[in-house]
Image 1 (spheres, rainbow, N blue to C red):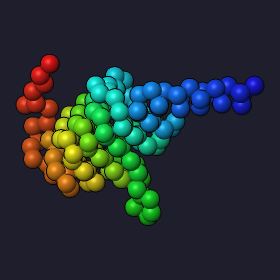
Image 2 (image 1 turned 30 degrees about the horizontal axis):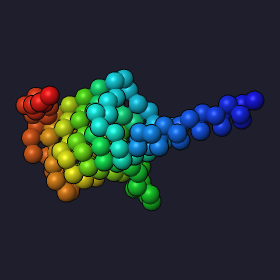
Image 3 (image 1 turned 180 degrees about the vertical axis):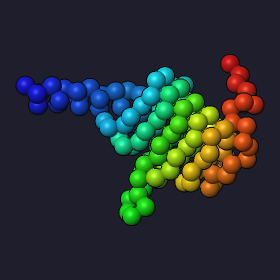
Length: 135
């Protein structure tokens, strides 16, 4: 019976991946209020850790690196990852961080930072404080 239930959960999970374009591994630890404003092409490694109140836009990868320095990202609270950004490897993203569109982040990012570019570079230590959202 347990194998049947597990298989049903796996089928529902796979079906939801096809419907939304969001692939989240089974072991992913996710905090409260994770938001995906736009679906499609989002991949999150099954060992990643994502904090509370995070927002992830389309085309984002939160992935691992293999080898001796391998590992997965640990993402803090109140983080916004804009479209097309890649957060890769055994790194820590602090709290209240904004990662810009298309940024490739492969190093630790301190709290209250704004990161852009390839490779990701901190351009501000004011975090989300001065970021404006338009609706």
